[in-house]
Image (cartoon, rainbow over all chains, first blue to last red; front, side):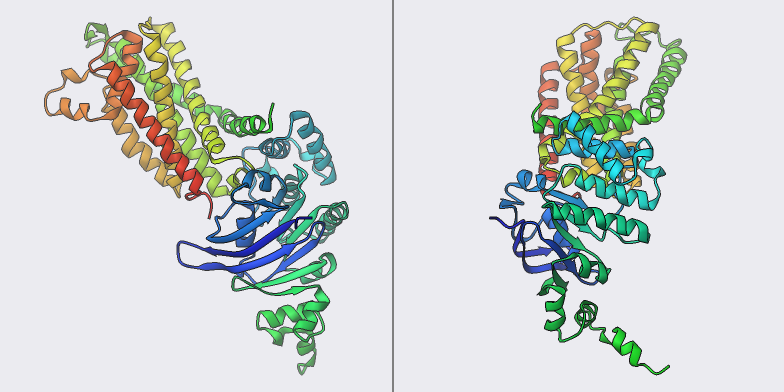
Length: 255
Length: 255
């Protein structure tokens, strides 16, 4: 059985000379909930952009369910749904049109698009806003719509690039319930987040990325033991060289 | 419909829906502008210039105005649509879909092409109601208009891809497109100009486009119709090839 995502020796060098990814290799199995953690500028988004065709790799290979993401990009992208970090909705479209056009880009027939968009608008509590232009939606609603858009064509691999940045607790829990449910139904999930407790609760496996390299990989317990600390948070602080910020260190500080 | 046909239809619908949602700006304003030209140059100046090359002056300028309407609208639609989507990053939704570079380029191209066609058709219909506009050579006129529309649609795509801010579009339109079109003989015959202005006009590629369209409508040509058609076809094909290369490389579209 082919891996949901297999990245081999992926290097991305920007024209400025910055090497955002340095021979990265990582494999995500089908049905996994995989977390990718790292500080800002570590290479998380670049890895996602290379996987989804928004950036061109300098070298290396990316396979999505066995399909080459460069040579056979049509088949590969058909299986991927991307909810990006930016609220990149088209200002000219309504919520309903956003989903409908996206479905069209992925070759869904009209009837299927209508049914699927109705289902997703309902699932993300956007039905009453279906005819509103995206500019009229609140930040939380835009975030929901972006997730609905990523799911519109029923992707087998869902990529969530910091999907809960700046959203309220209620929406965050609602989103995770939905994502956990589709993961249980078989959708593979790749998540990047700055909320370590989210990654700890949701992800079966986590990779730390720093300076364009995967530096550690495993379950949250395995990562903690790799760094010889008690929790994922402490392991992360070791990774970014800020162990003085760990809860244990803070507790030991004189009042 | 196949998945590829659905995808192309969705990409094109998005482009058409964009200009139809702001039709006062994209259709109404250019139509009014063309009418102002007909009024000022046709009615006011036309009362002093009775005929040009044996043709009523108002009738003489209408083919050039129709071509100008198609050209400017095809250009500005594509340039602004691409730049706007790049700035919002909404274009990522199309770029991360299975759509091929050819599908993306054709959809963007025909978006502007169709807007130009709508404005040009409305201009022609209204002008025909005011003054009789003959169509002497429809077999030259139709390919000539198609090529002119498609050529400027390609120029719009090229500028949209290259542009980083709206100032870049204004520069291209105000400092390159408008002078070339105005000095290409929309309002006069080059043979009436003193030297060196006649020779300078003959170095302007738009002069040959206006000549072709004028020949199609009025049967009057200053230059070889066949040669103009061949050169325009070659220029359009070359520009299309350049744009396709840019889309394939993801130039200023993908990181």
